[in-house]
Length: 159
Image 1 (spheres, rainbow, N blue to C red):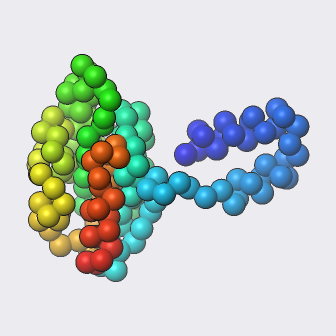
Image 2 (image 1 turned 30 degrees about the horizontal axis):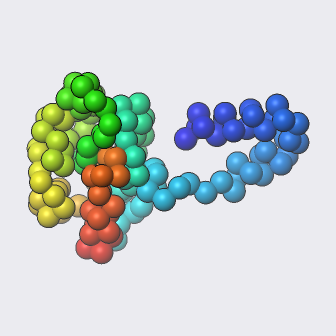
């Protein structure tokens, strides 16, 4: 989100918005629902809920954010990146490869092209994740059609 914030600040400054107003606005900005929302579960696990949308660039950014979190285990639960056309499989494979290069375990939800573990739905994701606790960091990322917000609701209700 830093790039977006810098672009917004630059545009405001070009439009002669006073710097103190720009700074105040940056300090009170609220993220959209399901976009890089960092949640600590009761179990102590960290979840980055970015279940709103996904494309190759945002996937890479989210993976890099995940590896910056203090954790012993990092897992990316990745849903479909919709609307990629003929490059879809190649783009999904590239994201999976990048995750593995970063040391991130991959659970693909109905997308075998990511590599790693492929599951069919929320119950299978929960089974693949196992017991989450302090030292675990999980990224949920996919296009809206993946419905990963349902997984987030289950994670919050269970721990």
